Amino acid sequence: MDIQRVTRTLAAAAILGMAGGAHAADGYPNKPITLIIGFAPGGPTDAIGRVLFKTVSQKLKVPIIIENKPGAGGNIGTAELMRAKPDGYTLLYGTSSITTAPPLFGRDDLNPKTAFLTASCSVSVPLILLTNKAMDQQSATQFYDTVKANPGKYFQGSSGNGAIDHLVSMDIANRMGLDIQHVPYKGNGPALTDLVSGNVNFMYSGSFNSAMPFIQNGQARALAVTSEKRSASLPDVPSLSEAVPGLKGFDAGTWQVLIAPKGTDPAILAKLDQVLQESLKDPEVQKSLRFQGAELMDKDPKACQEYVAAEYSRWSDTIKRLGLKAEN
Image (cartoon, rainbow, N blue to C red; front, side, top):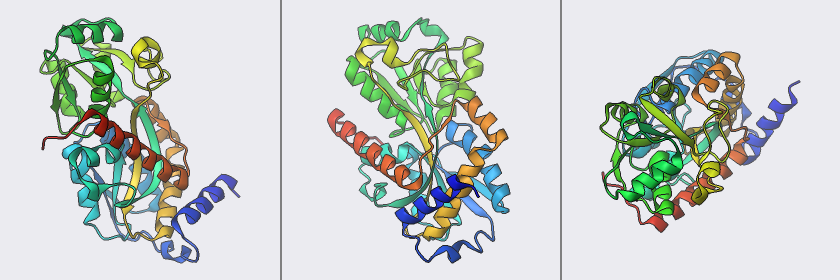
């Protein structure tokens, strides 16, 4: 018997109140599942989600149909989920934006503590500070000095208002005394395209696989990662914490979780968590995750919900402190 699997299932039961309800998942699923992704195709959430849920689909023995609903930092996708029936057949593969976009847009109805259920934690990915070739910056310290000396001159692309790369950029700009221009896109992919085209000067990208070809051919330069420690996928690139004195101890990035509508049966949520965690350990999925710069979050359902709640509090406080408000 797999003791770890039993432990996770019991943890899910405890946090979700599953007592006596295991029979509800016996026949689940028996038809296709729709998986909403709140960002454009080609971005990091979409890339990891498609690989991961191909394996989840195989294990559940039903098709999983991915629907991209980009915009408003992921809020459009979250709102779509909340209109769905809580039957386990419409889910959301959410990102850290579920904790940043609601307070930024003033959407209290999308508060992750109360609006929906976090079924399972998936992976985390640090952001990469990227500049385009024309900026010719050799280090993160040089980059921030250049930007600080030219207030209002440099444009930062992000995957959308309220997305984690937007909030990280604004937080760093405040800490470092930078005056930058923010250009939101509907996903990481479009922002990266405009970076290498020269339409924006820099970005904090959470998509390792999309960024790597441009890093390797010199069209983009990776100056740092936003996690406190270096990424195993970019071992020669320093963290901001080690490279920039004013950012010592800084630690932020994107992460991904599986979300279901409020009212979904706890037994269904427990089954989804079990299958997702099994899928994350699949050799082919692991290979893809390494390519994406992703690492397992390794949190049971209770710890996952607590983590999401803590991140929502963190970024709500940051948004209030910085006086940020999204423009639709």
